[in-house]
Length: 597
Ligand code: DHE
Image (cartoon, rainbow, N blue to C red):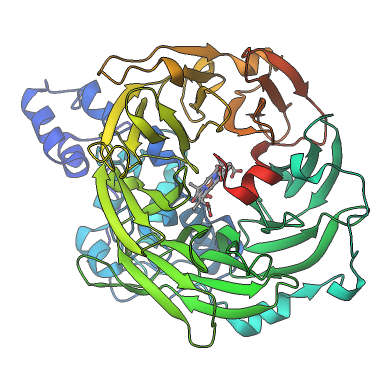
């Protein structure tokens, strides 16, 4: 491909250039449009970012790495080291989540040089500027990237991709620290905290977690963790808290210490999102497992020291096409309660792995063909079945963790299911169900989970109804609650993203009519007047009498946690503190260790 001076400039867009960028839509526009302007407003609107498209991984840690600029073949413009690193940073922060670290494609199209050089500079430049109705954000016209940055990215895509380094046993062991060896740790709980009702709260942009007492709402401690810290999980006994940052740093915190602190830490890669512990009877507190986005791998670690014991790559064939994928990310990991196994979602190849941890040397893994783009999910009320979203495919996959088999793959009827761990309740007419909301629309879907008592409903979407709006991330209930809470965190409307919808599950009819819901304007109740505080992720206290929500604001703005009385749906308390920087996920010790949701 010969690179020429770009002829498409924002604001001076020719009809021909737009046709190139917008495809058939613009061709239609060309037919209908008068001489100028060339583009109908509706066509451009189709090219604007949708909520779901904005909720894609930002690989901020890979973005930090200095990478040598590759040479350019004849006819392709080379970039200086500084330009290449600037482009690399933009790519890893904004593009790699969809197009892959190695640009081989994930939810987005492949962008390998054989393809990009064929498309050419102008095409790439227009595509980055305007996006596409298929989901590519309009980076240029939205103002997210300047014109110069769009040009730089179009040139960058014509060059060979940067390949970040691997992270194997040597690197893991170098990063591994046992700060307090097991024999120097307490033999019994040395503080007087009610550990089972303690909440570990992610302080995302501070790279910290706050430990908050569930009864007094007192912030007992704030502990430094990894960068853009993501989630917390508990050991089966509830003694050890494991926290993972997006930089793949794991902190293991001993809650028995007088002042709970990190007793061991390790880095398991460059980018990671998930951590879990062994929960099978006889294997409590024995192992921890963490999954990485880059390199694509998971590692099983000693449950007392985080010593890395077994690293498994997830590179391999996509389940259906049986073509090689070089970077299938590890998404949710759960521990089975029925077998000594970890359940590992491998995103891009669409496989669910049941990893038997009884003999790490002779590792047995059941590989289940599921669906591509597996993300998050949880167990049903009996804890036997694992239900997980293949989000970019709008599907739920059901696994029987007792038999180690695929049960069903079901379309949710909505756009981009995002359940978190989901929510289990007994529907008055449909029996036991598990709920998910959606990122891409306002719907909540219920799937029947009782093959014994309600075989006709089992593993089918038995009801679907609207909640507040699109952009929902999490649903939640508790065995003692009659309410289902549905957030709308990423909804563009401040009034919606600052509220939560509450459904009375005992009044649901299941006859196709939409159940009513109450809207609780939590951001307003929290009295936060600056920014666009977003309500995210409900979590119950141990007894299931109160439900906590984060009111998540910008890093330099006021955030809060709002506690709601689950009987009256009235606000019981607001936790505000200057240490509560960007609170997001909340993990109640008892509910997390027992998978109560
Ligand atoms: Fe998460 C769970 C990945 C952005 C809050 N998130 C998960 C899981 C995955 C995941 C794979 C399941 C882990 C498990 O169960 O083992 N999250 C990702 C991303 O790739 C994504 C979309 C973009 C990124 O760059 O990381 C992303 N997540 C976010 C956020 O922006 C959230 C809202 C705020 C934050 O703190 O980062 C967020 N994710 C959460 C929470 C959970 C989670 C609170 C656990 C939910 C639960 O109830 O267990």
